Amino acid sequence: MSNGIRASLVLLLALIGPAGAAEQSSGNQPKATVMEDIADIKQALLGNWESIAPEIRPSKNPDGSLKPFYLKRTFRYLPSDRFELDVVNFADPYGAVPLVRIRIGGHMQWQGAHPIAPGAQKVDFLADETYEVTPLVQGFADLLNKVASVGYAPWAVNAPQSIFGKTFLPFGLKEGTNFMEYDLVYLRGDLLFWGARNIDGRGFDTEQNRPTNLQIPLMRK
Image (cartoon, rainbow, N blue to C red; front, side, top):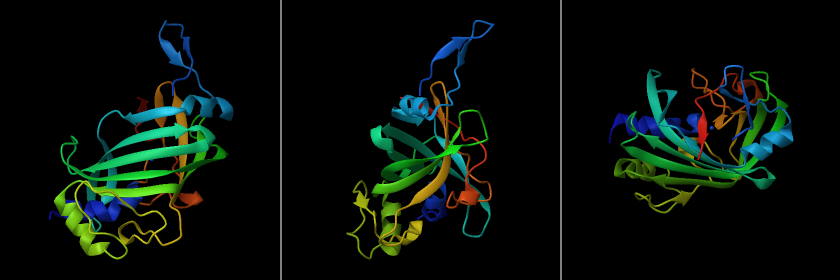
């Protein structure tokens, strides 16, 4: 088993995330309208979004040295502030070697304007419906069988298991608790931005760690 697979498992929790009306600029180029009304933002957000290409995140090896973390996201915003998020982690920058799929579902809690850009909003993502893990290579399944066997069936490739509401040590989850991140949302035309990950590896686990910059966007699917 490669050190890359092992390090990716340890760091998954730390990494774990519409079309607006257009107006013509003076140069006859389309310019996305900035939406600042929360009802308009929610309406425009409805639907499916996906990564433009494999993305990179800052992460660290167990010894503290820096390493890249590659992933792709698929996101769906639903009525009543519900969301579904799929994240696939890869071993390579081109997304040719998938390692694990994580599926999260729950609710978005809107907390007011974020100062990073007009129309940006502070949003908390609460995984209070679904949290599922699917190993995509044998090495990852083997590792999960060593570090997350209690309370679970044997882990196997392409066999999802729910970790919702359970203890799952690789992600730091405790029984009876729901995973939540303090994030942000910003819409610009057909692009959906969340917050950029902290370069020192901190998760979005507190209000103080809420992101202050924009991450590479998702594109309307």
